[in-house]
Amino acid sequence: MSRFDGQVAIVTGAATGIGYGIAKRLGGEGARILLVDVDGSMGEQSASELAARGVDARLEIGDVGDQATADRAVTRAIDAWGRIDVLVNNAGIGGVNGNIWELSVEEMDRVYRTNLRGVFAFCHAVLPHMIERDYGRVVNIASIAGKEGNPRMVPYSATKAAVIGLTKSVGKELARTGVRVNCVTPAVVQTRILDEFTPEQVQYMVDRIPMGRTGEIDEIAALVAWLASEECSFSTGAVFDISGGRATY
Ligand SMILES: NC(=O)c1ccc[n+]([C@@H]2O[C@H](COP(=O)([O-])OP(=O)(O)OC[C@H]3O[C@@H](n4cnc5c(N)ncnc54)[C@H](O)[C@@H]3O)[C@@H](O)[C@H]2O)c1
Image (cartoon, rainbow, N blue to C red):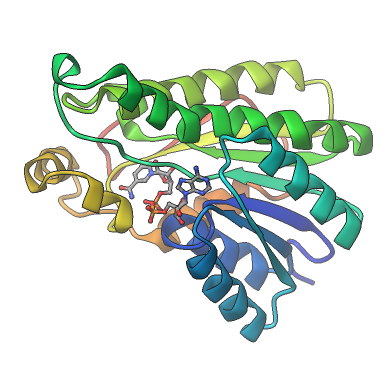
């Protein structure tokens, strides 16, 4: 008997990187997975790879910042499997590096759309189903940048701080139900998102990790899998650090 046997998980930004790692982990432990991603070709490839591993996986292509994508994802999951047990809000972008006076308000809007509006839209669409069944696990992928505030990364840091705030609020809203809502705050993990940053910016972030190394996708997926499981029963609205010791709070 695996931890997620019979369960259904929606994972956003699951075509690659941390999201795909989470999808593999949950799928490997029995979950049926709806991958959501704006990148259709990479999404198809990842969905086929999961299927080849024996996972019942489907793909919904769309921008998480669009409420219609979240609504379609819910309909898709319910039509296919009749339930949604887990929502992992993972889709995120890094944004352009620069001091706040060098960045445009349009750049702020662009980062906000994926990093915060997307989390809101998916919670808004999925939570009614979880409340109705009195069971659910939501895991939001925030960032150490949201706790500490990285210079030259205001849109990213600010939207990730907002994901932490959203998690705390929604966790409290649902504390008397069977739905748990938590977030994780990883430090640097080697994925495609780092291509958006300058090498100096990446070095700044890596230098601040006391363990002296970057995190592994599997390490993030292991923590997320626990937060997504029934075993996570007495934690909600909480922020789980996974930063190699950068934030010991
Ligand atoms: N890699 C790190 O160092 C790091 C550290 C802390 C937090 N995070 C967070 O982890 C999450 C995953 O990042 P990653 O490192 O795997 O990045 P990544 O770039 O490798 O993957 C992000 C995925 O999200 C998808 N995506 C982006 N915008 C989208 C949108 N609007 N709608 C739907 N899908 C969209 C991309 O196509 C991609 O598949 C992000 O929220 C990121 O902020 C990453």
